Image (tube, rainbow, N blue to C red):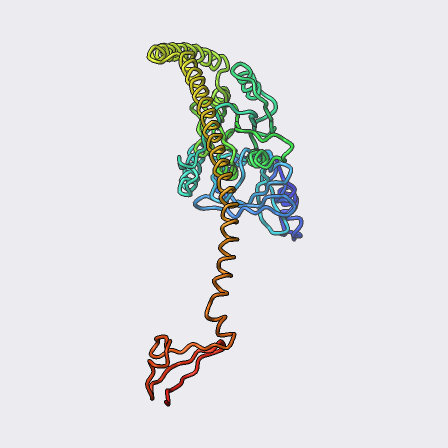
Length: 432
């Protein structure tokens, strides 16, 4: 196939023609696109930059060369991976040129990891990093509820996974289920799964919050399961306050979400088995325990009955105790009656005695009144004979050294004496 540039040179071998820059650029573009209509290029991504337009610009490099690459916005979301610097990939696309900068580049239609080895290396590096942050520590894991009221499931709404989980739950112990549909493969899968986990944790109050979450996906290659190795998913699981069961892939498949989840199930069906117990087994266990409890309670009651009977034989009959108390009460009432009658009789006798004494005292008081009148008459008579009345009639009482002087002959001159009148006493001396 001859290009425009080759035909031009063939038609004009001499002299050397002069071409415009655009002619050269166009000829090179046609030549490269004609010979490299579809290529697969392996290299390491470098300088990846997502433009505001949504297009991704980057470089592919190996040990010796560099090739510019472009992923248009419409195709970027179809990739099973998120292009980042240092990632070794295989790009499917076509080579072309960009005349404005005199450079050739690859327009990438599809991108995949360059072999399992590169993916495993990236996976191990990411695992080491997250483990160093403590996200995989055992003491961070939350216990699963024994019997959740509501179960949240994060998976694709189509396919066998959701049906397997629902059927298993129905067989074991039917529960209320909330499904958050997500993509489980592709560029948007990691973001959707992380948002679903956060969404379940932030449900409004009028929606029942699940007691446990199941993140599930069927089996697949390492590339197919890569969304569950992304950091945003791992960190969303670590931040969840709802316990999470990881059920991604088959038993041999392992993703980073398995290390951070509170429990890992080998399959989605096994996740349903972890989430709820078997209803029939619980009923059987409950019936068995009820039977054992009933029998044990019967034995306890029988033992207590025997002990009660044993104690009752050593106890006095309550009827006998009551009869004794009644007889004792009658006896005390009778004694009380006699005591009351005796007390009343004694009080009556005492009252009669006091009444008699009072009468005696009254009679004595009358006798005393008569004697008082006679005494007062005698006293008045005695008072009338008193010398004080005589003194009032003009007589005087003479005393010498306290002795009554009844004769003038008994006095001698110069003797002192006292003369008592009715109104006082004066001192005197005998002159002659």
